Image (cartoon, rainbow, N blue to C red; front, side, top):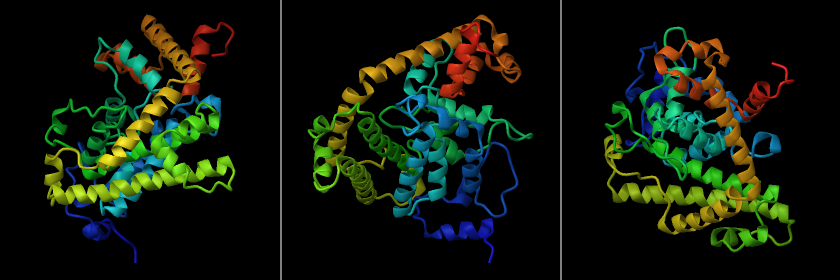
Length: 381
């Protein structure tokens, strides 16, 4: 028997009362006929996957610039890992998996090339023109910059998906609420909150993996970090070091996910959360237990000091900033070096914002090639 949208929506009766139901969405900015064989959130997820900005994540930096090695994580593989972890948590908590998946896939869609280094430089260059922040840019991408449909700008995503993008919050992201439409809720849905925490679990896990693989992290020094020490010591000493690392990374994710599921259930019961309205009116509910929060804080401190501040990573970041700064300034000097579709947006948004959009949409590789085209006299256009 084929499953229509109505049938799929009926099946959501198994979700908790505080989960977001597909037939209770606040809707889209532009009215559209509903899908026949998909829920509304399935449509959002699929639009994100088929977007240009999502595909470009394949060649955008996570920690290591893309050309450093094809086995390191990129923004795309990071998004997929966040999706997997978030869906596991959402499924266990009887939340809306598809909404969770859509927000997971879109949470980094506004990122610049070269990771946070590119973002910080672009923000500095745009300080007199509204600044730059990748959550705001992510919403701008799905609301304005994607060109897939003749009847409206952007992807015309549902309110709840868009709220999850703009209110994404982690160690390196601040939830911004500069638009009136998103100020009505104190906190976003539990599905969005799950993505926030899955993001943290994913980047800690893969930064450990990539950091050890690259040799930037020292396994002996890492062994002094309590959380890693307890997990790594539980692996068999008969295995090779690499096998133990792989096993420890898997165990790390399991420990983190299990803690979240168990702690969220406790918090929801303690706060007497019975409805979606209760979720929207509360502080953030999806969080680690106090014990694991402390252990994670120590681990993140180690990663900051030994990986993110490693001299080779710093060198890559500084080179990246110089590329972004040089591109921005040469476009400002002569805006006609931008493609026609961006030139056509200047009257509406101003040349600085349009240049920012253009650079933010670049992959690492394209930004490097563009730098060569603009500054090296014998590089082919």
